[in-house]
Each structure stands twice: as C-alpha cells, then as structure tokens.
Image (cartoon, rainbow, N blue to C red; front, top):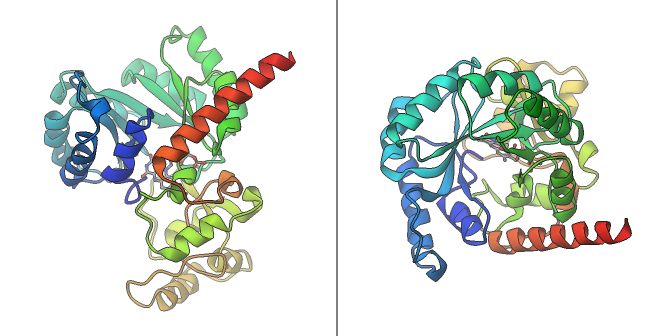
Length: 327
Ligand SMILES: Cc1cc2nc3c(=O)[nH]c(=O)nc-3n(C[C@H](O)[C@H](O)[C@H](O)COP(=O)(O)O)c2cc1C
C-alpha cells in the first residue's frame, strides 16, 4: 500500500505474528530503519536469528527504478519482496533474478496476480516463492478483468497442482476484512491472507487526512459503496498505469459525474478546484480517490494493527472450530 503502509504499521503487524509490509517507495531505507527501531525494542524479537529482516516490502514494478532499490534490498534482506503491476509479465523474471542476486536468495519473492494463466507462466519464469491471488473485491489497484477469490483461489490451486507447483503457497487478497474471510480463504486452498482495507482503520496507517479515514469508517454495503474503475487514475492527469489495471475506490462525486457523462477534462478541472492546490477532497461527496475494497462495510472502528491481527486470527480459529463441530 504505497504511501499508506510505512515502517510503523509493518513492524506492528509482524510483532503480532503476521507479516507486515512497507508499501513500495524508492526511499525505503528510512521506513526500514523505523521498523527496525520498533521491532528491536520488543523482547520477542531479541532472539531473532533469521538472516532476513522480518518485514516485507512491496513494489509497483512499472514505476520503480530497480537500480535504486536493489542496494537497499541487498543491505536489509527483507523477508519478502512483493511485486505487482509489471508492464510486461516477463519483467517479473528480471526483477526476481536481480533480487535473488542481491539478497543471496534469502528474500522470498511474492507476485500479486489475478489470472490463472499468468500464474502458470510466471511460476516457470520468475519462480515466485508465493503467489498472491488478488480477487476483484480488493481495494486499490488491481486487474480490470478478474474473479473474486472464491473462484480464483481454488482454480489457481488446482492448476498449480496439476502443473507440478503444489509446493508453492497461495495467499488470498481481496475483500478479507475479518476472521470469517480468513477462514473462508483457508478452506479455498489459500495458506494465508492479505488484508489491506482493514488496515486503513489502523492507528499506524499513514492516512492522507481525517476525511479519508471517515470515508472508510462510514462505508456500508461495500459492493455499492466502492466500485472498480479507471477514472480514479485520471482525475489529476493522464493515468500512468499500464493497460489491464484499474482500481477500486469509494463512489464519489467524480465517479457519479463520470457516469452522467461529464468529460474527463472537466472532471480534472473540478478536482483541481476542489483540492485547492495540495489539499485533497475525500469522501462520498468528494472528488479525490479514496481507495478501498468491497470489504469496507466490515471496517467500522479504528484499532491498533496488533489488535487487528490478533482479533482476526483468533476469530478465524474459532470459526473454523465452530464449522468443524457442525459437520
Ligand atoms: C489504499 C490501498 C493502497 C494499495 N496500494 C498497493 C500497492 O501500492 N501495491 C500493491 O501491490 N497493492 C496495493 N494495494 C492492494 C493490496 O495489495 C491488496 O491486494 C488489497 O488491499 C487486498 O484487498 P482488501 O483491500 O480488500 O483487503 C492497495 C490497497 C489499498 C486499499
């Protein structure tokens, strides 16, 4: 979650037994140092003996200069390097090879994908350690064609098994905001889950301003309150995203006017005026994009990242036990 997930959020998630990620930035070192300063104070990590740093880092490969980030990755060896949004599928192979080179193969490579065919292709070329199956309910950027995790995860699992990749885990992403979602994803064949939108209501998230958080907390009926579109990327100028991607965000004044036929040019003018220079204009009545997933209706209170991880994990365990007892 570029710009949103910094060192503090990542550290707290890892300390709670999850794996925290720092969203892609070329200025990675300060965030890793911040995470290290938090983690090193915790007694449970005093005996951390792994060669990798217990934090993941994510990159949008189409806008990241690999040469700028490789030295930092070599120095820190994050537990996981997460790659998303390659302009060409073959770019993942280059990234994976270069990362393995500088981290001596210590950092795992996770690729976030939304297609079974692409997963099978990259498993042979980039050889990721984990596939993140991103379904269409996911908040923020994703694929303009795609399925929800309920069908994507098992189909990916079956095809990966049939192609000899049964040992590569799948982690499910998109619409999972509580223990019920985790329990469902695990039964679909995922070995773990990603939560993005739920952490937009964490204390540690770097949220652009108060209205953004309000827009998250007020969200109800998530599939109506948010929508996938590429208009959100065009509100401040031409979209920089490669073809094949769009983003899920809160249905806003900009989106409603777009549906009414207002031109992109006029939407840009109106957004610029509303934002008044650097100020953003977030919310249902606003114009700037509030990235959020279809699970936003399940997110209704601000908690520490630790509380979120612990609560969701405990709830998933209870639900799985309950379901088993019913069978
Ligand atoms: C505000 C926001 C920013 C995001 N930024 C990124 C990003 O920079 N890179 C990335 O790979 N995914 C990004 N994502 C997508 C997440 O990786 C993940 O797929 C998604 O949050 C999972 O769905 P959920 O939001 O329903 O939990 C972002 C998601 C959100 C909500």
